[in-house]
Image (cartoon, rainbow, N blue to C red; front, side):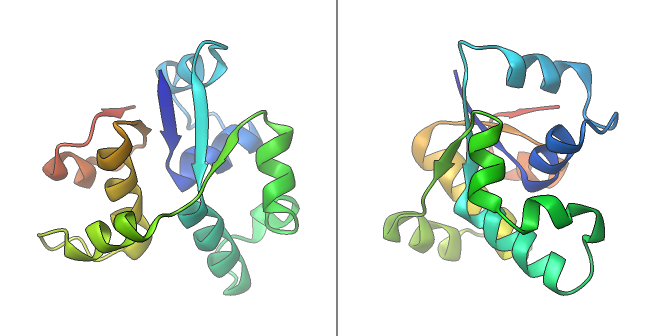
Length: 128
């Protein structure tokens, strides 16, 4: 299975945060699954860290590609088609990072690991 980690799921996994629930941990730990971290999450981490909203993410924010690789995860680039799809998504959800994750999950048929129930209105497959 191919998993896409929401930004908080990636951070919580990396920090061994207990807020990441057992089903998500099991899916991420399963060696049969490919775990992906979107370029949108890298952008979100760097932006929020710069603004002081993620002070605990300093070790990750200082080397996001290295943090992804250290976990054995794969980077997920953003395509122009996904960017267009994210921008065209209907509905009130305004978070650009989330909209990109939605577009990528839908375009690539990925299972999104996230606590955010707002994704459900877009019929994204989600595990939490």
